[in-house]
Length: 112
Length: 116
Image (cartoon, rainbow over all chains, first blue to last red; front, side, top):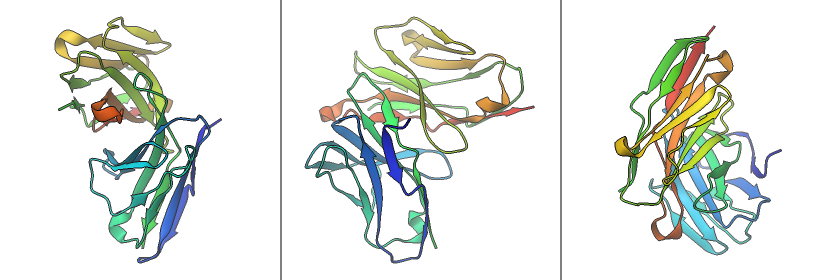
């Protein structure tokens, strides 16, 4: 049973729409991460959080924003979606440096 | 800077063949952690193994085995007697701990196709 949940699983929206991708975890992890994965497979870190009220931009510049008001919740928002945002978005959390990530099942976003 | 290289972009084998996925890493840290993840066509990333820099013992789990060699900075993954269900993208990753973010640095992945 998954301990980290992402919704929606699939989303098709029109250009210019505002969307929020949800990510919640029940493990009490402080560290959370958002990755963008294009069809070419490579994973790009776009945002991460050390804990509540802490957010940082990742290695890949992204037009999305994130918030961390509660430990368990780390949503990602696109104010105005564009076709270039079409991708899979993966959320992850981590217990500590000597543990791996636990990933959600991802959101496949298509912007038409 | 820390870096993970998976030189094999795609590998195709026939069922029951053995296959090795290569992973080479770069780090200046003396303490670090290495990981392998599997991403089946459904898209989720599944944790396979973690190894810390002080433990060079090889590990075997069923048909899976991992060979960690600090001397060559490699952490290779072997599947013995491959099966169609092993078809997936496999990622090697290195734990980076700059500033407490505890980010994982991923390789670009190796797509494995096992044909019946």
